[in-house]
Length: 355
Image (tube, rainbow, N blue to C red; front, side, top):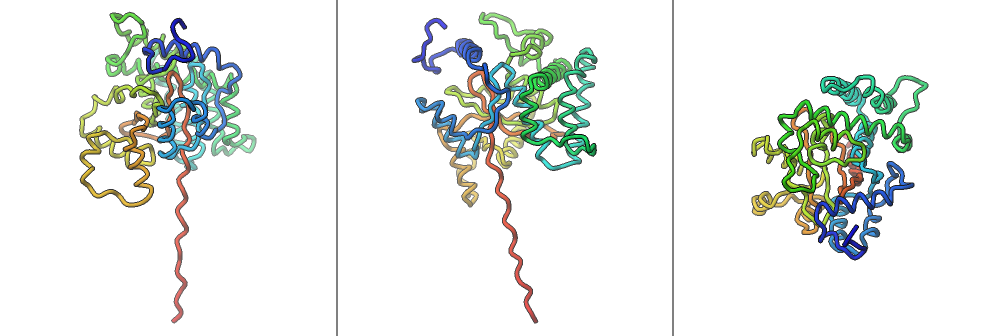
């Protein structure tokens, strides 16, 4: 790229230059990469950014927030959808809840109707759906011939190009169908990647054709919000970037302020990353801190000036589950792996006193 070399700092690039650079790097570096990797320790990021103090501070914050690993998705432009698919299936596989699994599979099956309602050819989208359905059916199966799905088998399946790409295409079609069926709600948030500043935002049909259904086109807030709502799952996206994260989820303004504050409070109370605003910190500064090492650690992570910006995509009502946290670096999504919650200690049962 003209005017950009190895010494150029990312901070000095425009958004268009960053996008162009990301696409160039992706084209040169993705050969031989697995579609979905095994878990690597989060310290590998420190090696990647050894000369970038700003990024090292944010990586340290991620470690303090409880993240211990990263699962990479191939940087081929489909990384968000592929990472989302893996996280979604993995969560269902590990939740150990047969009724919830059956309920979720029924809901996922019902998304076929969304594609039909949006006008897609049934003979096409059912073929793309089959690999996803097959993986979901390998959980809690009563068929003795079915091999139960485990982490190794899931990684293997998601690295099979035919299966993995079919699932990616289905999620793209589902996202597009949800957007088209809710066009009035989402159209105000569409954007144009045209480099001309006077370019008008696209209509929903052209946006879906060019930025959702097209293979190799990354997802942004609109697509993430639509897919999470279509499948009724919530997730967080942590931004490992020298720039600030984009504004809060585009559709936040559709909800009353009280409801947004309530959802933020619930998110902070969960096991996900602490997401706190400066206003909230000011309001809580005069309150008595919650005792305990874990609470102190979370307060430190929330107040750290090197903290990553985190955007929460939360389904309002009817949520099935949460699928974890994605790490977004310029133009690329991976999955963060959080330390498992320590098991509660066995209660001590006093001996029966003899009388």
